[in-house]
Image (tube, rainbow, N blue to C red; front, side, top):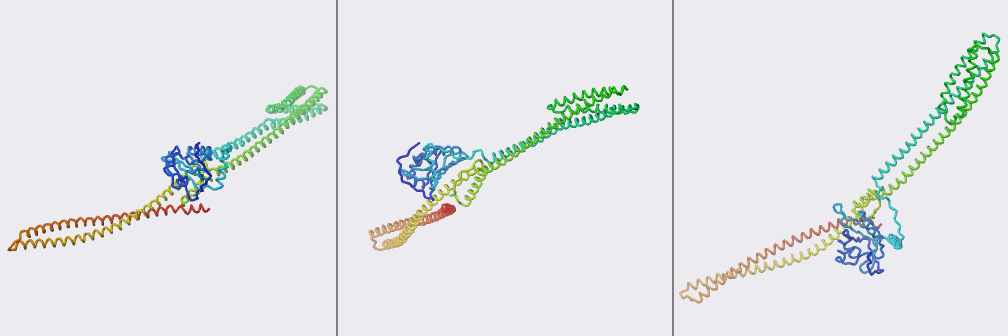
Length: 557
């Protein structure tokens, strides 16, 4: 880093109405400096042009500040900061500097620095920051991500909404699917088996009643009537037996967790069926209905009770399984509902946070750019330079700031040119006025000479005529005098030649007079052109003055 020495404690306060402007090439060599910059820096214009801009760098400025400036500028963005510069005599001055790229045909050809008065609070903050930088305590300012913009915001927002809808759809459809599966499993694995077991229990109860009736019938005295009743009961038992075995097929869909109870029921029903079929065979073969048949009925009743107990146990197990699966379904639905509520809350929080970020990084800078453009349209080129924002709004904000600075510099240059034109026109008008006055005086002198010359020509003509008459008288005399005639002839010739010469001089003097008149007319036309140019300069000053009320209002605020 270049150290410009010596340095002193002399502080130069930058007036609020001054704007220090300089332009450099891509290497930082100064190519333009306005009068304010030349006056405040203390350097002559020729000492600044062609020199690196670090000629005014103060040793108190940390290198990191300029590294950040060049990094920002090379990325195509403007840079703004509080800068401490050094005067030629070693003094210093603080400025609020804004450096912007100069583009031509969308190519950066240089940089322009516009510096103005810096407030005391901004200077104090900058001093603290630079002291921290000097001690190595650098703190990177929080900036919005460069990718945040309207296009990316819309794309990211659409993607986020789509993901939320997809997640909600997955939760909703998945939850419904799981509920459907649970209901299907509950119906097929619990409800159908329970219903079948209930019917089996009813059939077993019916068989038990039928067996009791058969036991009562075997004790009747009238054998014919008892045989008819037994046949009806046997038919009922066969029908119930077939229905029970048909209902056993519904138990195949029962849950594997109740397999022991199902096996116990099947085993009990198998034993009961064998005994029941034996009893039916015995009754249908018209064997004796005495004590052996009664004992067979009693054993069938015992097996019926065992099968009923096994069915009741299986039904209770299936009922418990159904209750557990119901509780699990409720818990699963609660988890899905809670997850959905968490997702909705998360989505709302993300939308709010991203919305605030979008408003702070996109909407606010966009509104600031619109406000700045409106102020520029009203003639305010002194407004605060705001380089916030990112994405499209940041680019618009930067473009508005660059345009504002370029217009400000252009208006300052126009005002300077107008003042120079006005000053030179005043000098030219004074000179033209003096030339016109001198032309009038010369014109009068020339015409006085012409009048005197005309009088001399008239007198010479008269003398020539008298000499000619004298010469004719001498020739007509009876006693001619040759010498007198000769002298008279010579006098006439000389007088005639003098008259001719005077006439030529008179014509030349007339031409000189015409030229003087013509020159006076040209001087008057030049004076009128100068006055017109002066009026143009006044109009330019009025055009520049259009922006001054906003400037005074800004400075007054």
